[in-house]
Length: 138
Image (cartoon, rainbow, N blue to C red):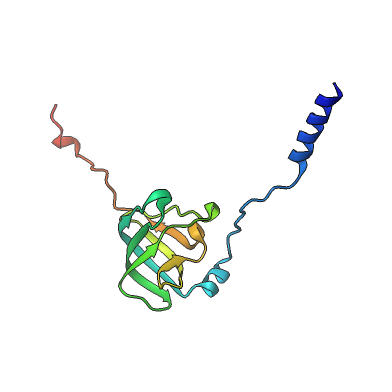
């Protein structure tokens, strides 16, 4: 009986010890602006899903407005993050985003804080077709 109590005590002790995890706290708007080399509003024109685990995934944007920094009128942004807490929840073709971006050592644009740096501000075009009642056959 003592053996089982020892195992139980060991398991409870293991559960009580702190574990490590990725916790990402969203930056303030001011912090996002300060850390970004480019802040822009753009609409997604195409998306590439990438390979295994979305490695190499990208979204291409038509830039509507630049709030900070310089860029081309069409911009490709990497949407891959190896950190789960910074995983992207974007990008839908036709949707518009406020983007807080920086560049990697390879010159590719990335969000400064994963999903927190890509804020959806407009939806994709409405794909619902409304058919007037007079056009319906009885």
